[in-house]
Amino acid sequence: YLKQKEKVAYYYEDINTGSTLSYNSDILFYAASSIKILVCVMLLEKAERKELSLEDKILVTMEDLKQDTGVIKYQREDTYYSIKDLIRLTITESDNTAYIKLVNYVGKDNLEKYGKSLGALHTMEGKDLFGLINCDDMVVYWKKVRDFINKSEYGKDFYNWLSNPSFFIVEPKNIDNNTFVKKYGSWDIAYHEAGYVDDENPYYMIILTQKFKCDDKEEFVNSTAKQLHKIHKFINNK
Image (cartoon, rainbow, N blue to C red; front, side, top):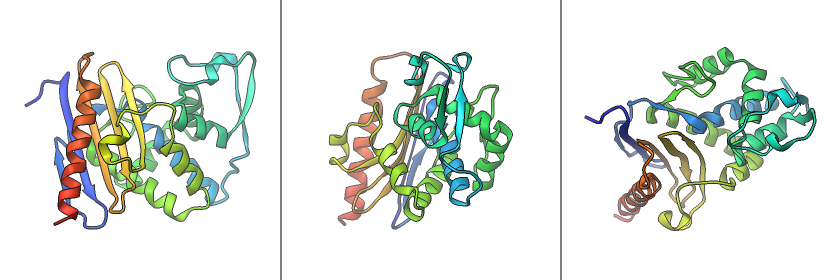
């Protein structure tokens, strides 16, 4: 049993065969920025259904600016951003201002309903706009993201943003330099990375940690990713 502040979880699923390997997959963690994919895929779906245009503009005032991650916080005056730009910045820069504007645009309750409609159990629980997450729910979101990427006209942009963020945790060398379509989360002791590895045989990989404010959390996430990738290769080369 892991104490509340010192806990880890991981989830691996081979997409072609459905084989899974997991540890603590139902244990809840503070989501931090890993949850930001959900509002983005929700809005992209709405755009695909012509319920909104990605070129629609949202005003970001100076009062809206959130510190921590992102680049919008450097704006000098009230500025209009397209929904597409806010989605891009939410993913590539993990921009907190962009993310919170998007959640408020769709409504937290609607985002919670959307997550649950996909099959997640714990979407947006908590007092803030990030909530709690576990591996089981996170893989539900990522299956939706991957399905959307593969089927939608907006998929290519989404794929490129998720594959090339300004910050990431898992080093490419630990997954044989395959493309990792992912989103990290980092706040206080929460430190996560989740997504899917676009290998010849693709697989989902979710690693969630709360390991105090220690130096080894990055090393832990990377060593776990490396081991899961080794197992993946072993399974597929039998």
